Length: 193
Image 1 (tube, rainbow, N blue to C red):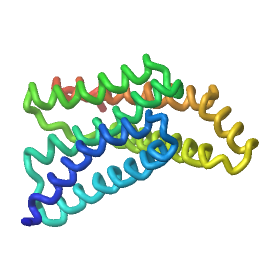
Image 2: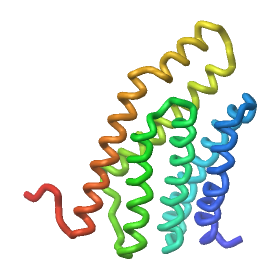
Image 3: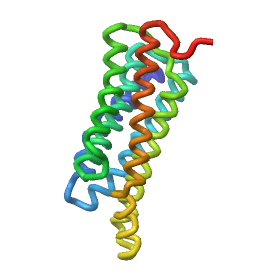
Image 4: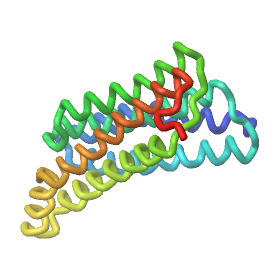
């Protein structure tokens, strides 16, 4: 296998993992739910690996520039939709996040314009992945049922106003990054010196 194809294969692997991760996470099977955490970790590692390999061997391609962020968005969408179904995340916030994430991908396709990922967008992606990983980790620990106190404490936290507020902040940052992309598309800066 040629090294230049590895990044795209890893991105495609993430696209395949995303629906399996989703099905496992919302499953009634405790074992499948716990496996979903490891699927998410594997998918996240492929994201780091494909970018590293593409840069190291200078194999960045037009296809890779599209499927890599698309695979990321598919994975995070799977997690957020599952969280809505589990009552962890409010539907309206997740709709906003998904519209922004897939909307920017659509803008790239329609206008065929390259966007330089802003610092805010990078922060947004990091926060999304951190939020999802934290919730999945807490669900995993909760379902080990080490003690009733731990189970109840984690359950209370996951469905608390704190998690709601954290997701609200993430939604606001997400909206801001969409505004940045729209201004970038029009060739204007939001703040001019």
